[in-house]
Image (cartoon, rainbow, N blue to C red):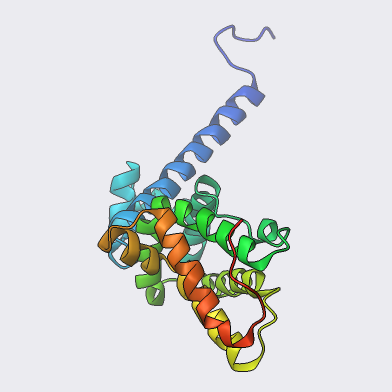
Amino acid sequence: MARNQGSRPRGYTMRARLDAVDETRLRITEAVMHLHEGVGPRATTVSAIAEQAGVTRLTVYRHFPDEESLVRACSAHWRATHPRPDPAQWSQIDDPVLRLRAALEQTFAWTRIAAPMIRNIQRDVDVMPAFVGQSLAADRKARVAALAAGFGARGRSSQRLRAAISHALSVTTWESLCIDGGLDDADAVELMVATVLAAVSRSRACRPGRP
């Protein structure tokens, strides 16, 4: 039997359907991302997601049957579009002071773009799936460890060092210095480098220096 000239190959039709599914999934994911950045996770509802994405609530649930799958998709997409500085690259800088300065320069430049989302996530983390808080804590610990290495601090000095580094990396610290205080990123970096070095000054593990 001759094929109807108006018909399309089966493979073409299946590909078009899969593309439509992927497009809908992306629209929902981006809707969640925009709502989390705008009003925060606590105020984000399935109805708001559906409206933002231009789909029904049923479509949202069809693609993401539970909150965790939805948040994981949103997190992965946001990280891909807002890549955070990699602490593994910081570790390639031997001098701990130069490493700290480079890390803060990169972090503050990223924070200038990422602050609205990070602020809302940290504020509303208690209503989000457990993996979010766990991931944030693990990431912060890894970044602090990468920057604390090489200072040679021990005991109480090490505790001060890690607390100072953690404070320097915080989004709220950047906001306090640059948004509220009016500093530019370069001034904020130097102030935080000085703060970290003051925290370990008793250990005399390294000398403050500039490149």
